[in-house]
Length: 445
Image (cartoon, rainbow, N blue to C red; front, top):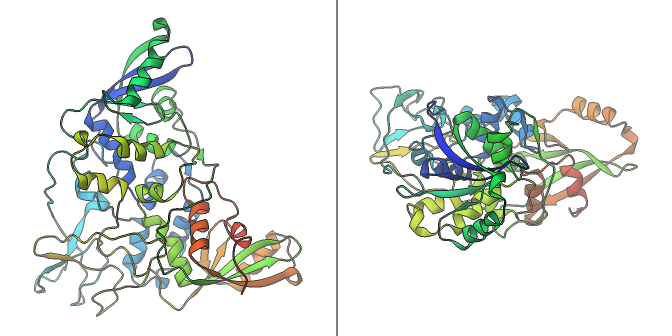
């Protein structure tokens, strides 16, 4: 976590309804808000769980817990589990310059082989300390890698920007802010109060979590201090952008109650579970780029604010790309990923990242996180376990479904189904019936 220094904000408050109309801020606060777009979903869940704010982010919490509970023997390497529970951000080096970097120290560490006699050119480095070098030793010797990205992060110089209660970031002189101040001018000046607020890293993380479900996160967190309440999401969308990869062709067996016409659970191979688990490594900005903006909260306003902000306020086109079209760090993706997300190709000088998914004597791994062939059980709320007849019977008993009432439907998950699954278990959505949503769209074989 960042240190406990604080940022001072000037807020204009409507005393009548006790709501923040907007805050005025320099680059420190705005850059912190924009940085949310570069953070992987798994990191958001992990930070929320260790924080004072309980949060239930759709089905993502179940997927994260499934990775935690699944025996490491199911993963190609021990590091594969770490990749999902503690994913890296491509923007990690840039985020280190933030005044409030809510990502913790674990996401910016690098390691090399503990064998001082090990010789490799270029030098091999690892994201995780549990990776084994080609010589057989653990790569658990931490090294300090400095990446020069300048002092600025996303916003240039001493820019002063306006942030509305629903997290729309506006620059002076733009049409949006002109309309905003026209509305302000029609209000009674006695009902408006200027308030100075000092915020720290706790408030920043609360803002991130609250932005998933609230249209007024600044008021909720900074004025009314409701950040200690449980957060649940309750809305969903139906469409996804046309960036699906070509690898979406997975076979899944649905265990269906004939009388109730509901899916009790699914049996799927490692390819389908790799796809589900990979949601945890996706940056928030990638998700917002793909999904239609029909969300309960207002985190999508940050995405659109970066789109609308004049280039003279943003540091570079590269920073714009980090936020609006984020890619995965090197070695994090796998071949033919169904969502078609790209992977960054940068290299450190005289050093090379080792693929955490590689087993002994492998140099490159185009496969996912799990060993195969393998079969898993997936519940309707996307809790994943290794396949177990006893657990299957337990689920049927809980649902009051006799064995004589079930039928098995084998379906193929293609591009269209991947799109639906992605939408209905995306962490801004409240999904209690992901598999049953698929039952109406999948084609029986």
